[in-house]
Amino acid sequence: MKDKKIAFIGAGNMAFAIICGLIKKGFSPAQIIACNKSNQTRRQELSELGITVNLSNKEAVKHADVIILAVKPQMMSDVCSEFSEIDFSDKWIISIAAGISIHRLETLLPSAKNIIRTMPNTPALIGEGVTGLFAKSHVNLTAKHFTETLMNAVGKCYWVEEECKLNQITAITGSSPAYFFSFMEAMQQSAIQMGFSEQDARDLVQSVALGATKLVAQNPDVSLSQLRENVTSKGGTTAEALNVFNQHNLTQIVNEAMLAVITRAEEMEQSL
Ligand SMILES: NC(=O)C1=CN([C@@H]2O[C@H](COP(=O)(O)OP(=O)(O)OC[C@H]3O[C@@H](n4cnc5c(N)ncnc54)[C@H](O)[C@@H]3O)[C@@H](O)[C@H]2O)C=CC1
Ligand SMILES: O=C(O)[C@@H]1CCC=N1
Image (cartoon, rainbow, N blue to C red; front, top):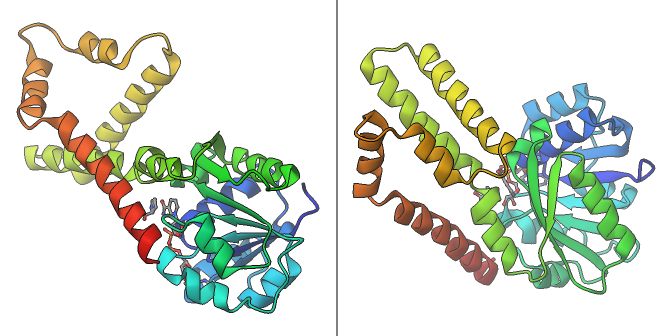
């Protein structure tokens, strides 16, 4: 585990979150190579952590045992075309890209035998991530265990049995930190309009988000609807807020948003 060289091809927001999470969990920076073509500031940050940042994509892949493909999906084809002469048969490939199927990766890297497709999320940065994982049945068990151990270092893992489920995982955990941030932003804006300072509004909103989330996590036997009802006094204030959400059909809005993620991921699988 700790003797494998891991190369991140693309070290933007998501890969950086994973790398920082791994280092916090005791992985050695000497094990990690990060290639980030167009972001000098990020390269500097990674270099300060002791990570090798000065190799080309091709050199990094040649040196590495495990390659984490972490560029934008639209870049994947160009990036993989640089690797045409490299033999991937003894290397393990982990893709974190949304909407790039394993079939597509097999086409882009024909010598690769062990490809694991994952869908992480940015709370990995603080060890609170969730990663969905899928691999075809022929994939080496050790490669699967390695990937699970790696992603467990930055949060929880959830294997899916069919690849299409990863697009659902994208809607449920990959994209969804942004749903919560949007909700918090809207609350912050509302508090600012009431006259609270930006900082106070943020402190108040993040405190309640943390408190509510901990309440959920620490009461696994209490349903979410019960927790909601515990706040909602009959004829009181909360009921009025929830009425507004109901009038605008929040449940349906959330459902539509999550289905839109899946549709986009499927479109990307067809077009990229
Ligand atoms: N941001 C997120 O919350 C999540 C992102 N993902 C996936 O992670 C991948 C990366 O997404 P982000 O980190 O958000 O994007 P990003 O834009 O922050 O990172 C991509 C990085 O790749 C680098 N790059 C571009 N061309 C390159 C090349 N030819 N060689 C090496 N590096 C190159 C860029 O400099 C950039 O820093 C995507 O495929 C996305 O679907 C998956 C789960 C969650
Ligand atoms: O927005 C995206 O496409 C990526 C995948 C999940 C989160 N960010």
